[in-house]
Length: 230
Image 1 (cartoon, rainbow, N blue to C red):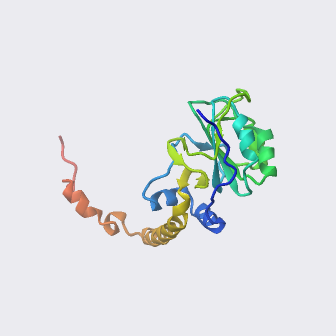
Image 2: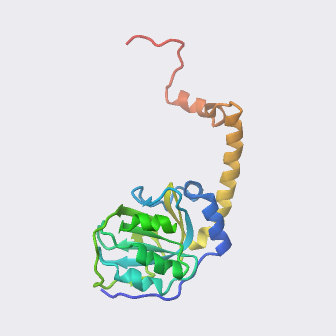
Image 3: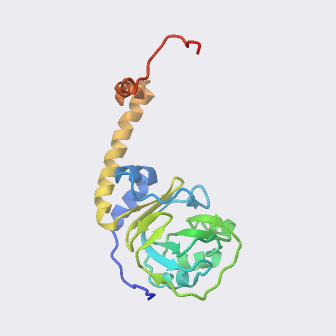
């Protein structure tokens, strides 16, 4: 199997990335047809963590962070590392020293389908990380992998340069070519939700303005004035 490090990738427009970040994971996931969401075990290591960035992808062996070190060199400010081990791992493959290096190169955060260590230090640094586990289990730097290749991370297909959005709801991936359109759809969804919010705040029932009474009737749900004994 060949391994490679791709130095140059195409990225989405920075303003579009920022717009998607402001919209948030839940809105984007819905706006793009409920696609691109990573599995729910990918959790931020602190609740306030947020990220909107272009993906630099890393394919590596479990328990081996050599390729994470290699990936930092080809990152640009505004990128995020998306690390996908080739098999299941919860080892602590990333910690405070790597985060310090990432920050020096303008890397905004980390998405890793494995473990991280030094979580208290990462939180104190305000370095956003979404991980499968927190573990002090150490790693090695011994095995070849690849940087900026297509990967599957926590069930989501990620290509180099795709947009990564993370917040307390999880992580969602937006295809680079679709980023501007998804941002437009996200804005429309936010506007629609604000109208619904005003109606709900005024006391209107969702069962009415969502047209759900017809669905209840279709499903055979009956309204009765009193509960009958079975």
